[in-house]
Figure (cartoon, rainbow over the protein chains, first blue to last red):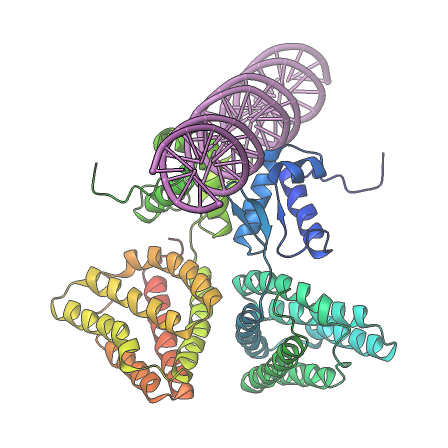
Length: 225
Length: 225
DNA sequence: GCATGGTTTAATGTATACATTCAAGTGAGA
DNA sequence: TCTCACTTGAATGTATACATTAAACCATGC
């Protein structure tokens, strides 16, 4: 017996995973069209589970199912990025405030601090991929500490969309050395139970990050991703 | 030829509409289970479009598709309501601020003012249903004026969930006479282009409304809806 | 040569038959 | 009578055949 988990997932669930991987890896580029039957053949299953997966991913805003035109992998415009960042800024700042109000113990904040340490290590090593992964982990954990499961879901979906753009801009932008100071400030405020400061510091951090990203995209004429 | 639009919608789209109607009307009560084949027979179509609709509505948090147990109409707990109100409070307040920053002309704010007038008229007439409808319209329009399509989508989904609970509490709560003062204050701030005031006034309004609703649910031991 | 209308066709949308899987029921043994 | 293994069945999950539809193409007439 192989050591793997063997959860015997449904083909439909596998299709969701595989399609997501294909999209995030760039194998299915933004703006491209693909027939349901093509994708089904590619994943080695029938159209039914592939179609169900496509419908699910349509609900998550990653693609669009169009009659007789196949599924289109949705491109992300600068305006989309602005919308997404605005939502993330708001919901993450709220999460920071709620987390601060919860009086977490030091143990509870360890994961958050670990992600910051990971970011610092990645920066020191000049490893941008590792930095991006740790940054994602920080934002995910921050939202988790906020304790609102709906915010986690929404932030997760929005984070997916951002990730695609980040892959492009990651090597264009300057190394985000300011970022970690901001992150530590947020954690300090949460530890101190200062909801307003946690909110405002994170809000400012996110707003600044948004400006950097948007300017980067505009300067490089990257109107679609 | 009948005068109706005849948009020739797909059965799948019809199934989504019908299922939503059945859920909101209470024909499919929260917590109840239903076989895909039952629902298909009820809607006069095969399982395929019904299943697609169910999967879509699962993504919207209205129900859950469980293997061999049918679809369960999801109940909403008090904790769910708190989560939903927190998200709505945040995103609507942001929308109010963004709307204020947009320097809308008087014309652009007419719809918003109409909804407030409708609420006043409904209050005067003691028509709670009409008041609730106008209140929904106000919040929808406010979010629209914020100009973020993703916020509109999210607020719409959350609004759906709230609506189910409101139907229950509408006749329990005192007539919301304070509500309209708040609404007018928000519009005033938007008209004046004062983003911070628009944000804060609406935030306070929503927070107060949440308190009222939650207390009402707790006092009446309505832990599930 | 161009516009127009009908025909073809390729793709999604739908129905249905079949496979799979888990839970409930059943029966034998202690 | 209780337990446990086995059988059975009912429901979802999947494959596939078929219906529908709109886009592309072609032919026909002006």
